[in-house]
Length: 267
Image (cartoon, rainbow, N blue to C red; front, side, top):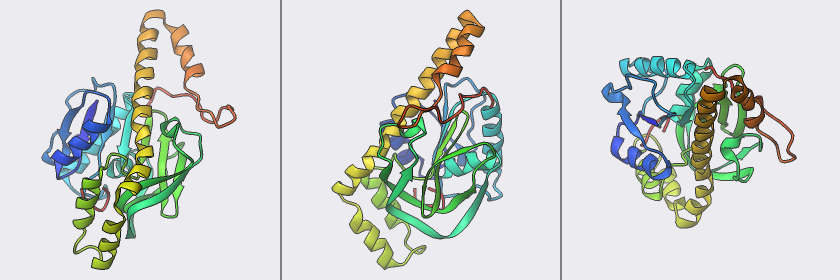
């Protein structure tokens, strides 16, 4: 998988994703101008960042262009926080400044329809830190997770985005929160830091299941594509049967996959 690392503190971000994803990651540090020169990956992951997707920066424009082409080429994507917002922007959604921060362990609810959150309670705990949000999901996207701050998860075809940070460990959560000095009142920073403990972290670890779910989705995609190369349209038709998400009753809730397509404001 290509790890499109948009964080300025690249090492800790890379380590977090390497720990959570059961896949070989090839890192590209986007703020340094690094981008893949090929689409020959099984999938891509876009990380959080201290940037905003609407900033006029050469590296952000180049990243958007590459991501748009990669989505059109059919690569599966997972976007986290800034990555979630960037994918929404590229696909025609709208990202805006919230005028406030959502930070700390928060409650999020999902509707039970997305395979990305299979095995995660419909009301679950996550660590968040962002002051931008996806105000409007991309056309034809399915929003599957929300809280009072807005959209926390969407999917369109092979593209998934989540606003929260399932990759964070306690050390990262503490460092990011402490780094808000100057952006947030000392009392609020202190309250968030006091809330970062083993019990809350353990609760938030439930959301880490999405990494295994995404890897499983990617492996299934590769299996179907390889089968299609061998047997042609019969395997292609299998996609119609294999990748329909279901709700708790087993009823189909989403159409099949279509072959189309550290402290921060956003991370």
